[in-house]
Amino acid sequence: MTGRIVLLGATGYTGGRTAQAMVDRGLGPVLAGRDPDRLAGLAQRLGGLLTAHADVTDPASIRALVEPGDVLVSTVGPFLRLGGPAVEAAIDAGAVYLDSTGEPPFIRAVHETHGPEAARTGAALLTAFGNDYVPGVLAGALALRDAGEEARRVDVGYFLSGGGRGRAFSRGTVDSVVGVMNRPAYAFREGGLREEPGASRMRTFVVDGRPKPGVTIGASEQFALPRLAPGLRTVDVYLGWFGAASGAMHAASRVTPLLGRIPGSTALLQKVVARMPAAPNAATLGRTTSHFVAEVFDGTGTLLARTHLTSPDGYAITADLLAWGAGRAAEHGVDGVGALDAVGAFGLDALVAGAAEAGIVAVQPGE
Image (cartoon, rainbow, N blue to C red):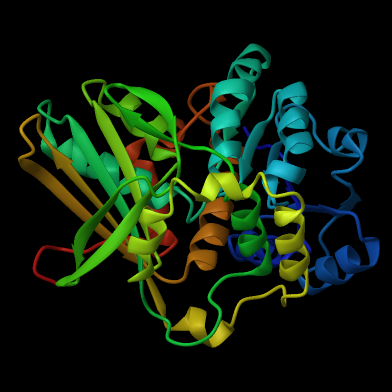
């Protein structure tokens, strides 16, 4: 089978990088967005791609984009505010959907609310198909394969090294963080999903011989890894981008949700973010290395297996993974319908190969 690929949000920072990654793979996506002049310029620079007008504030325009058999890739965020119409369009058409979100409430809605709807129409939803959170799902799946049937707990950590001074995150990423900071997060504990504030727990991983702290977040792993190992009782995902500030975030985890009750607090922060440059500092990204660590334990807390993956900057990962996933889905389809994870949709061996093409490779013990 060969389906059409539609890229929504192509003129944004992540969308532009994704469009380039698709073209580099020999794909010819239809570029969709609300600014025809910017779309036309991008399409011309990438070799004369087709374009289509679509505006997330006009759901009918999104629905008109998608036909059965298509692959719809959305990079339009913040997803809590803007992502719904693309998901609904893919469901209505029975299409394959991928996105670049890292927002835990949106991920949860895709799995718990939209997933059953998609299963009824034959659609396949692959949310958070980028640096958030395919590498952690992959690391966890590899560690679980090595651990065997005694696995009861998985801890996954996301870390950065290098970089130095300069902003390593796009305006869209910061806007997404602001949008979810006052929303409940979730965890997988005692064999089920439960709501809890972000940063409720903190632990330290050893990465490249150095201790690095991280705080808990909602992610994709809480949905994906229990499907691979039904005996799991706990899946925790830790974000380790904050260094010494992790302790303060953990201490403030009970207070942060209360900030959302202050009238206008989120809107004020969003106005500040709107003044930021859209793109991160290119030199900083070029010096950054991403690390993904998964550790599997048995019921007594004994470490059974550990996987450490590494890769270049997160935006390159996201663009390359979306391009790989869209191309494979368009040519071969995916396994299953409803809300899927990367391993379930493509198989572990295929995902390992696709991730390697995006620069995500295993670090051998002792390296």
